[in-house]
Length: 196
Image (cartoon, rainbow, N blue to C red; front, side, top):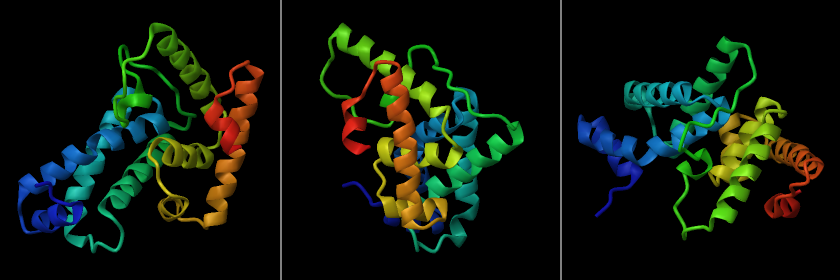
């Protein structure tokens, strides 16, 4: 039987290192995918992911459970990404590591696609990544959390420390920029048409 995050956190606080390792295994891929999408560099995203769990482990005794464990870890990761970007004083770059599709990293694998569909999706993914670079950090992060990590508007507002209306505005403005960029490049994603 699989333990909930809350059960694993309680056992971890009691000194059970295996329980914290289970939390890492459960949340490592989504946190890495988030860091990669925000920072755009594989090695730096890996560093942020490791630092996220190191900080979470150190701060675990003070975790009161007022938020979900996943929200707490996402907040740590986002703060580390912001710190990294400030230190670098540059916009994120999107480097695609060989043989890795970061869009699929946090998702489930579906049925096998035809070569044509795979090539088309990767081309579209490249255009979307290019457009994401045009967005301010807050808009890019809101889109990543909503579209790639399936968070609710309220969860995003809590993570970004802003009102719900601000999150909705950031998403609308960011998706509008993405839509215009895709239209300009002759590539309109049906998902974006419905949302914008």
